[in-house]
Image (cartoon, rainbow, N blue to C red; front, side, top):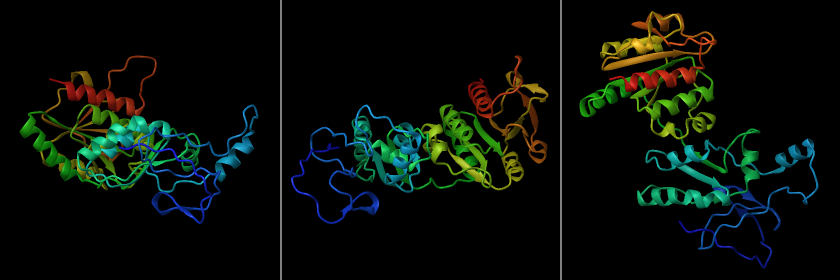
Length: 323
């Protein structure tokens, strides 16, 4: 991709300047503008919006007012280098805008070239100052200087995962593992579980359509690109979905600290689904009743339970590597 060419503006611009995604601005010459990179020279860092002379401190109220005055970028769905990179290179993703700081553009250029080489239709990146991205997300968001505006991936169903599992068994000779989340709603936990599930290469994950947050934003950032590699199905009734899996030959286990067998002693069959419940309440009664067997983690320390995302990672490793 060609990099931005520095320009010396000798004349003051007249009229409105059109920016990313049809946004219009009417800032004076000294204001920061979105810049689409072009030319051959390295990107030049734009002046920080609301910057104060060196040596002058800013109070908390001043910082909040400055943040409120910065023009936000609307409808951003993904942020963070790993999440944006994997979405950018995913051919089924529809992307409407890439917003990136000048300092990060050089690092991301290889992925821009890779997408072009693969024939993917992608928009030109728009250079923005970090302050605009800061203002576009809740305070404290670690966006790393890069964000996307894109559509959500198309929702799948349990049937899609079952079909993918059969293909996996037939063509790769590997067992099909399916993870089911029962009312796990925290986006950080869901993102971390998606990351682990993608890392260990399981067939897919089933979540509840009603209680699961959209698979974007914090979920995508925590998943570190796993969203674009894992098949995630949304189902309304988990108990009915578990019966559907059992009808197709899946053995369904539930994770519970009072389980009758330890995970280390359990040998997973060719088709295996395991269910994790939310922290605190654990598995609901109907979900637990639908399991063929309850399994426990072999913990023996001072703390008897684990965070649900940590428990998922241990189960995924044990089941996916079992010979």
